[in-house]
Image 1 (cartoon, rainbow, N blue to C red):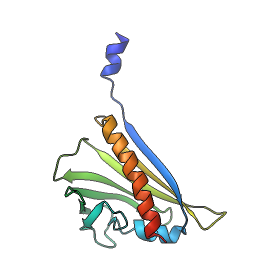
Image 2 (tube, helix red, strand yellow; image 1 turned 90 degrees about the horizontal axis):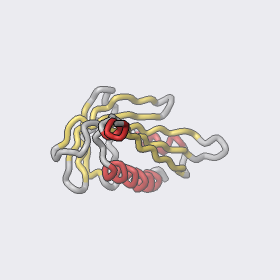
Image 3 (cartoon, one colour; image 1 turned 180 degrees about the horizontal axis):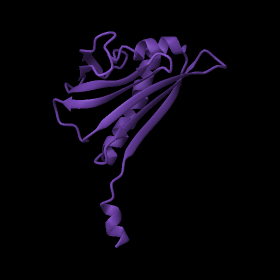
Image 4 (tube, rainbow, N blue to C red; image 1 turned 60 degrees about the vertical axis):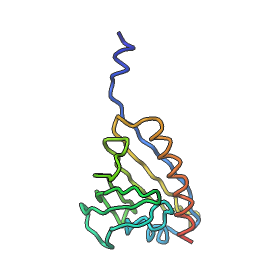
Length: 149
């Protein structure tokens, strides 16, 4: 009985990746804050407007041709973080829900920045979705470090 109950139990999935970027928090935040993801090589274009308010939506077009509409959920210039969710996609994505947060922290012993990227997925996320998210974040960190020089 317990085994069959476990198979139907709902779960949630969180992908959390982090890195240290050898740039000041201001330089890194200047890349993140516009929410255009221009620093990320996977993003071909964005309809995000500079200074768009929380609640605004924008379309991100990726190098593979896929398009996601994202909604800005939170942004803090004081705490240096941004959160967004995917609200629509031109090609169906493999999950019902994905909420992302990128948070920056000043490393006080140097002029470097600690970067964290969390994604909370709905319970229908597969192992492949989770792994893809992990590796895309790791690649994105390399692009963000390069853009923040």
